[in-house]
Structures are given as C-alpha cells and as structure tokens.
Image 1 (spheres, one colour):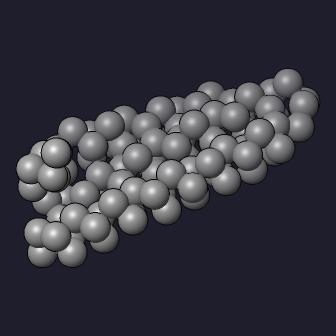
Image 2: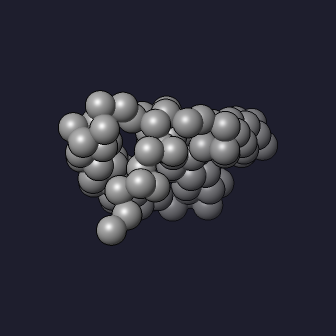
Length: 97
C-alpha cells in the first residue's frame, strides 16, 4: 500500500516541478508549488500510515504553512497585476529596486 502512495506523491511532485520550470504565468507557478506541497503532505500521511503513528498533526501544520505561503504569493501577484496589468514572471524582475 505504501508503494502506491509514494508513487502517486512522486508523480505529483514531478508534475509540480515541471509546472514551475515551464510556466510563465505567476498563478500557474503558484498552483504548481501548491501541487508540490500536497505531494509532500501525501508522503507524510503515507509514512505515518506505515509507522502506525499519527502524522496527521504534521500534515495539518504543513497545510497551514502552505495556505500562508499562497496568501503571500497571491498578494504579490495582485501587486504585480496592479503595477504592470499582467501576471507574467518576466515582468516581475523589473520590479526590483
């Protein structure tokens, strides 16, 4: 059973890496990072099932951290859209001071 969970998590993480490396849209990159974080959470649950330990507390903590990360990322995307009227990452490098 643990092999299937780890395989699905590895596929999700690989899809997230592919999305981060190929997307130019900031929202798409944030979604790919979220996919990678969910793959890590799936790994935590899988190893928790294997050890018989309760890893659900760690997963809830990781989800809370991921939500905070997404909130900050979306705030940056909104700021980028307000200043440049576009959410392409290439334009974000022009915002450096």
